[in-house]
Length: 150
Image (cartoon, rainbow, N blue to C red; front, top):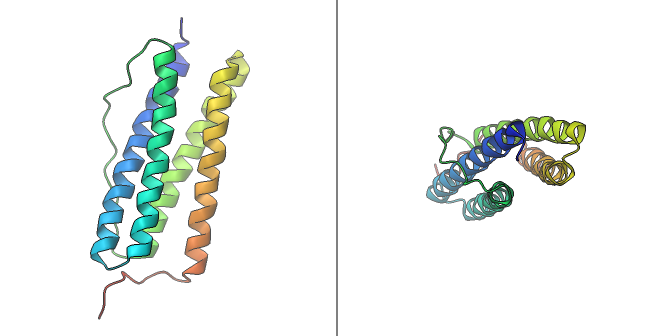
C-alpha cells in the first residue's frame, strides 16, 4: 500500500513538471517569434528535460499501481523581455526545489528510500536548472531586450 502523502507529492510533482513543459514550450515559441533562435532552442531543451522528470514521476506512480493524475496545469507565464522570462522560470524552478526538498525529507523520515532517491535526484537537477538560469541572467547583464529589431 502506497503512503498517501508520498502519492500526493508524486501527483503534485507530475502536475508541476507538466506545467513547466507547457511554460518552456510557450516561451520557446515566443522567443522564436522574437528572432532568438538560440534561446528558443535552449527553452525547448529545457521543456524536454522537464518532460523526462514527469516521465520518471509517472513511472514511480505506476510502480504503486496508480495512474498519473490528469491535474490542472499552472498558467503559462510569458514576459515582455528575456529577463522577465528568466525571472518567471527561476521562480518556477525554485517552487520545484521547495517541493522536492519537502518530499525528500518526508520520504527519508518514513524510510521510503526509493522515493527519497527519486526526489533527491530531481532536487539536484532542479538546482542545476536554477544555476543555469542564474548564469544566463548574469551573462545577459540586464537582459531587458525582447530580442526584436528596432
